[in-house]
Length: 290
Image (cartoon, rainbow, N blue to C red; front, side, top):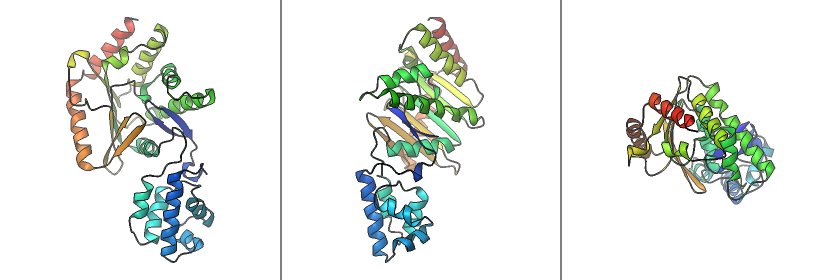
């Protein structure tokens, strides 16, 4: 399974053959399909001819044009070549979403990039990062989400988040860096046992050599990342990308100058945060106080 989620807003399970799934049509899917059809017809291509050029079946082309199927990146790129490289398909694809609650296109793309990244840096000031959450903590996050989820949806979200954490265990040579505000770990949820379980889980997940956790202490004062939580990753091709998330929205940041600023802020905050050893000591002290 592949995972689609926002750290605070919840997760939804997406089948591994994500691009092949027939979703409920959304306005953006219908619009994208209409653009494909218009460009194809302008190029004088039948669906069968277009299908041959993009190396997909005629049925797939029809489903995309009718807004019933999500286009993948290969479809978009080959479609561009087949219709004269106008750039219209690439631009339209950025706005495509399935139209399902909680299944934002912007995070689906980030989730795919995250699973392939050669490094991942995460700063959080709201809650424990999803990759470090205990099951009880994740459940509490989902139960508090508005609008409320059904029991079935909640269980699917919980399964998805726990599944997503496998990425860290299965990729022991990929550096994962986390910087988290101290108050995040002091925010109470459940009872003392639940809090101890959370801190134990965080300590366990951050123990491997490829995982670095630094805590920003309460007394650190104002710092460079006050604009909010942020993630930065490096792709296998050496490209750096950023992601920021807020109320009911998220943004994939690809502009090199913007990403450079985010990286600079992250590195500055890393120097202001506690060392990994001191951070573990702090979490162990917090656990001992429970």
